Image (cartoon, helix red, strand yellow):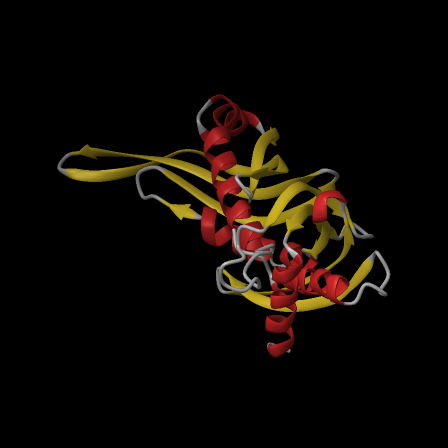
Length: 250
């Protein structure tokens, strides 16, 4: 995973801390907003953080990513990944999706319409029969983790609510595992792009920033934040060189 511009500013300030030791130990990184497109949806991402010296010449990195706009665009983003319409099989439509913080995890609630069809030939014609269908509510816990310096998610279906025979089908078949994996893959990909913290680092410095901790948090009124902690190890010369590069890019 490569770092967003916000963390590049963190590293820049760390460099400045070496060049200008009179500055405060804890440096505040002001919010920096960028935009990306997820499944055709424009999503604004704001990143801010702090950097402070740590033992052994390293620097502590603390960054926060505001995912509020991702929450607002979640329904069409998830629908683009999950909706399907198999003539002789399963048909799924995501009507609404909500993502709420449940620190350090988050809870995704998907309101879906599900149908299952079967095809058979009779009298030389193919007939399509609807076996089961209706509305369902699926709740999935999403927990972030660091895997090989990348953001990863684990997903667990908390419950599936549906009435009658549809509920029996969804809870006893492969639907739960299938939708869990699809939601995990879709949200994980979106979160990785939204919190792409290394992309702002100059070439050759990708391996310097190491992610250590990660978790979802509540930014107020249910607004989803992603908090990331890590460290950067550099020599004074590297810091000074990085500072010059970053100044030239301002």
